[in-house]
Amino acid sequence: MKKKNILVTGGAGYIGAITVKQLQKLGYNTIIVDDLSTGHNQHISGTFYQVTLLDRSKLHDIFEKEDIGIVMHFASLTLPPESMEKPEKYYRENINSTLNLLEEMFEHNVTNIIFSSSCSIYGTPKKLPVTETSPINPDSVYASTKAIIEEMLLFFEETRGIHSVSLRYFNVCGALPDNSLGEKHDPETHLIPNIIKSLLSNNSFPLYGNDYDTRDGTCIRDYVHVLDIAHGHIQAIKYLEKNNRSTAFNLGNNKGYSIKEVISEVEKITGKNLKVIINPRRKGDPAKVYADNKKAKTELQWEPKYSDLKTIIQTALAWEQKKLNEK
Image (tube, rainbow, N blue to C red; front, side):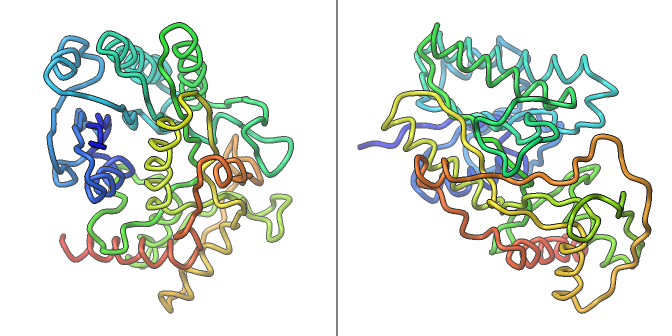
């Protein structure tokens, strides 16, 4: 059976580019659409259109030209603090662009979409681990856009016959084991690359709060390797082809690590000590968030293979060292 062409929005970004690479290894033909506002030219492989999803006319031309079978929708603005400062920008970019995409899918009879959602839609959970049936309670505009899009997708299934899998990522991290792709954000807001950068540059690392109700006083989060996230998208293709119905899955590690535990593992791997400066807590940081991933394991046939903390940090460290050497 011939594999379908996959339209990948945001395919020049961190998770999108790594997923594209894995898809191509499996023989899928990928068509990347990215406006390069946060993506990178050097991450692109295969057919590429530098187009914003807000440009309905250009998006229409792509659907007319390409024989698209499935859509993977990574493109999104993703910074929660910025979203609280610029809510109009986030609602416009994230929701309107998705609406354009869904309308083109319906017009061109493309009936399957895999959506990059987020564990942030749960907000501060009252019960752990978080399951797919936990209350949706976003506490940022960014998280709100993800929750609204998930709701849109369910109604587009009911009214337009478009089936979707929403993948609720927890904290995505790490780099490809061959060191060819990794995180490259500006600004970098993720914990693990920022710890590594501080250590490699001999700078102090700001830790926001050490008095949380956790085992060592620092926040606990669920970290999952980017290669496992990419594998989740591949499994989602199979799920949609087999089941033809919409659902959502947590892609997490089923356990959490504290910030101090992450720092300790980085120090152990590098043999260097990190200078930590304790700052006051940040508003809106829950003490603990981690996933129940049983549904993904049983229904999606997904198993995180690279998401032990050592592998995550070793691959992230190699990537950050490579970027330093290239400067």
